[in-house]
Image (cartoon, rainbow, N blue to C red; front, side, top):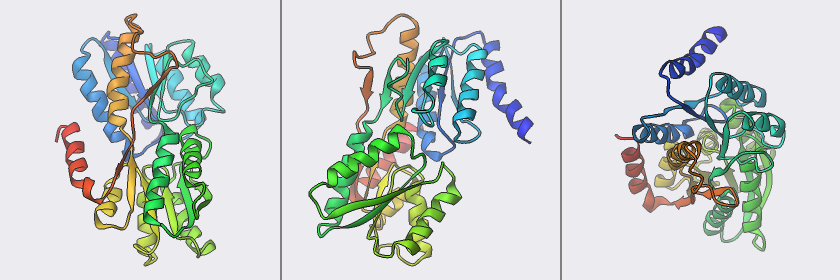
Length: 311
């Protein structure tokens, strides 16, 4: 089955070469429904870039080595540009620089500013963390203790969101006392919440820093009969998260725009490869704003998501 998976994952690369068009690839950090919006963004960009072949690639698991091998395979197949959400930018510097020396390298979601990447397009994760703090302050005016849950503790997007939230909570009676990682393992993500409920019964707030963390918090609290008793601060727009916001069991959620990352990113790479570097700012950062979605915003936001996906 593993070998079959490798064959299948390699197939689109061979097809791209056969099509005799320059290929641009969007490489994510692990399997998650969060990236469905990026798939839609790639699809929209493809319609506007008929001279290119655009692909979105999932590594077999959220591993630095596996993601690096995937990118090297893409380079070997002749891919002209790669936009990547690095699993762990701090330990991937050498590997990312290798890719950047062979093809146009851009980053998204979690930046790697110490590498030779051309530009980063994505959220300001510090700002997203500050927005999470605003949600917590509004929901808990009397203070409380929070535990956070995240996929990759070493990734810049995780570190910056956590730091942003801590900065936003300074001077309040709310404290982020711990953050637990799960390496993008859904089972472990839920188990982390269950363990926290036992180990820290005085916790009054839980924060899901990655897209799937809030749904796992929701499920664990529901199963423990504590849904609605503990404040939940969400990130991103998983249907379970949006449902929780609408019913009031999730205080609000900070949403990113992976559709725009992919759509704008593919077009930026195509222009760059044609010699037009005007879209790359001097600081190499293109920030797509994050937005807080509360109970009154859910229906309009969900409708917009469907429209972007062409549904």
